[in-house]
Length: 236
Image (tube, rainbow, N blue to C red):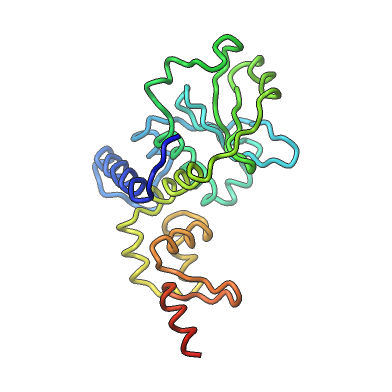
């Protein structure tokens, strides 16, 4: 398993966005068209298909690496359409798995399940972590029942989530916009989330990554930074 420092992930995302801008032939606009980014830069296609869910499990999407395909769960389509920010972050999450952890050189030489089935080995994003599945044959679907869940390691989960955030909320643009606004008002944060096409929770995490927001858990009061929150507290 590879390990990525946060700065490495930010740099990879910046390079990918530079490639995206070059392919577009124009400056980036926001929110980022994540599906077009995946197609032009990573060579990934997207489709909606039902993905089996175990009792109590929520599966949003899966990466079918051998087919260079992100499969969005048809069962969750209505929910995703109501919450496009969640859909976009899910797609960015799967792109992170591809860009950071898939060994593309080995895709045409699969070793796992060669003798067992002609299906395609993939991973799906579920509440319990990444679950290995076979999608492309009936035999593969039968084998699904025999495969154990594999939770993302904390480092893997952190890495792909940081990647998605870095693509959808590019560091230089995001930080500049955030610093110019009053970050102590929730309505302003919701407006910023809409500009980047993300959820308010993802926006909050991104702001906290750059120490541009601190939320007092007891009062839900917003501060522009952790230092200002602690400094304000010492006044009373």
